[in-house]
Image (cartoon, rainbow, N blue to C red; front, side, top):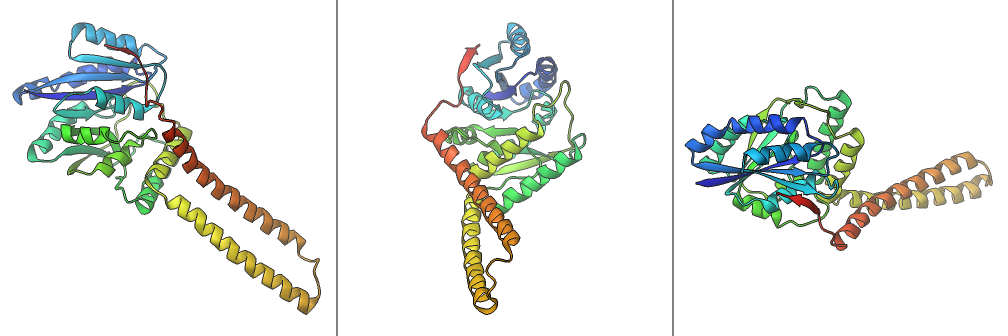
Length: 309
């Protein structure tokens, strides 16, 4: 029999864990008919509620359920990586515990693998239920990423995926500390089939992704898979150098022709402020890349496990 390792990152998902388990087990008949058994890894990302207790209840009645509990909140990216490291299945799936990634799609995803695909990914074709502003900036982010990065990142892509062992091992070979899964999935390549579905709202609770967290996450993606911002900073530096030379020549000519060296100081202040702002902005871009390099060279572990069952 083939083994499916299902990875379920959890952060304060006490209410959703039992529902997720019930939904996942609805695929039991499909698994048995295709000679597939499974192991279910709940990766607790430092939850503050009773998520761990709920998972332990499931472990007590089902030996196929496992728990990996972090010492603190390391983030979803670390949870996915931990699940990949612990998984040993011929197939590996990544699903969210809030049921926005419906386990009912697994049979269709397996059908694609049986056809010869290396992985099956999902994307939302609608963002129903999300704030309009958040949806707008999300779409702009994907458009920007695909313009400035060579890595293909699909608009509306979810972390919900089913892959072969080969793809999972390829993901594990990328041991970088600063992780952006959507970009990593695209970078490793392999033949991927995309399944589209309408947005599904959370079963219980509220999203842990605030607008600010999504903004920071988008910066993580941009700086992880594109050096275009550095090129932009260099371009702005050259542009303002040329502009400065032009202004110097203009000032000299005006002095020689009109003999008026003092007028125009308000515009001069504005120009100096603008250039200073651009310099600080470009310095901030360089700082982001330097900070990522700093974190990489420290070689800290991506996560620490407090408890494993």
